[in-house]
Image (cartoon, rainbow, N blue to C red; front, top):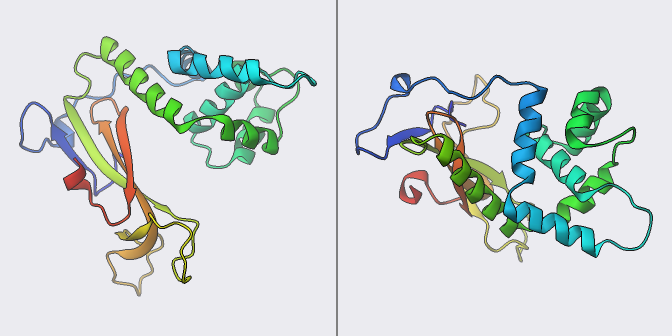
Amino acid sequence: MLTSPTAHIYSTRSVPQVKAQQLPLPLWPKSGHGFLTDTLDVLEDLPSVQAFLKSVQHSRRRCRPGYAPRTMWRAVCLKYLLNERFTVGLIERLKASPKLRQACGFQDTIPSEPTFSRFFKMIPSSMVEIAIAQTVRKLKKHLPDLGENVAVDSTDIEAHANPNRQVVRDPDATWGHRTPKSKSSKSSKEYELFFGYKMHALNDATYGAPLTHIMLPANQNDSPQL
């Protein structure tokens, strides 16, 4: 998102815009399975996540044990860390890599797609919001300059409802503009209409870490939200 040509970079110390070339290089550790494991450990140890995992463990029915909630949580987080859009892609990655299975805590078997779907529905959105804030506070302890240079950008999210029906099932969604998904040589349009929402994200421009976000109807622009 930070490389988007429409993203805007700001400094919280001064009002004028900061050029991306002036920012120092990211200081994150080198990527690898060890880094993924350490990141999953941090996400699992968050207080809000621990409370959620305990509640899921206590509410499980008396049947076959299945997969541990902490293992399922780590796999769900791994999906986003690997930038896998679909669960089937995560499953294939887990099947092909013993180290990824070890990072999550799986043994020989991998959960099916419906199993992941059922667990995902159990995750409350409020817990995710709290977990993001807790993670940012943890990062701030290790990175004192976190948040001094920030970049804001929005991502379009289409609604599942049909806007052409007489009664729209999603009354909160609106029409908005976005960069065309597929630009042909014959098309000269800079923007196209879509029906849904925009996720406005605020990221640290030095380290590339997401700080916070807000979901709004598609007709809301970046600058007023910042």
